[in-house]
Length: 219
Image 1 (tube, rainbow, N blue to C red):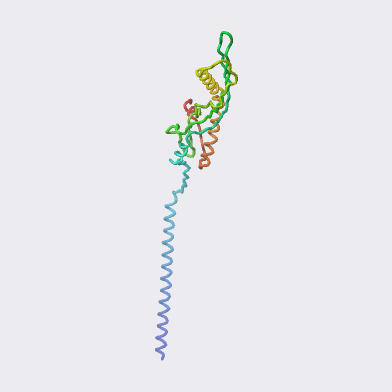
Image 2: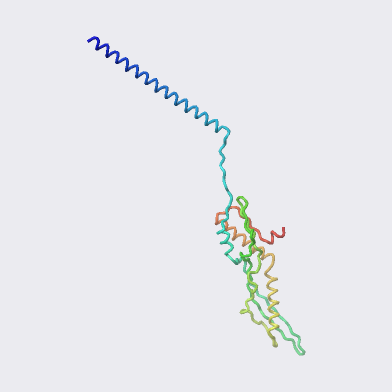
C-alpha cells in the first residue's frame, strides 16, 4: 500500500516537471519571435531612413485628335456682321443737258475666318497651358452686295449695263473701305477670343491663350 502511494507521488512529480519544461519552451519560442520581429522592424527602418515619398501630379493637357478635328470641321465662323448702304451717283455731260444716275446699294459684310485655313501647328500645349493661333480675320464672302435690293434713286437719260457695272464696283469699294476698318477687325477678334475661350473652358482646359496669325507674324 505504501509502495503504491510512493509510485503515485513519483508520477505526479514527473508530470509537474514536464509541465514546467513545456512552459519554459513556450516562453523561449515567444522570446525568439519577439527578437525576430524587432530585428525585422529595425532593418526596415534603416532601409527607409534616407528615402522620401514623392507624389507627382501630371497637369499636362492632352489635346485629342478628335477635339482638334471637331474644331477644324466648324468651317466658316462668323464673328461680326455689318450691314451697310451706299449711295453712288454719276453724271454724264451732254450738249444740251447732263444725265444723272443715282443708285442705292445694300450689303452685309460678314467678318470671320475659315477653320480649314489653320496651320499645322495652330494648337500647342505647354504644361498646363493650351495656345491657339487662329487665321486672320477677313471677309467670309466677297459677294456681299445684295443686288436684288439695289435700286435707282434718281435717273435721267439712258444708261447701259457698263455704266451700271462701274457704279457697282464703286459701291463695292466704298463698302469695304467703310466696314473693313481696324476697329471692326479688332471687334471681330475679341468676339473670336471669347467664343474659343468659352469652348475650351467647357472642354475642361484652364489656361487658354489665343492669338491670330497677323499678330504672330508681326512680332
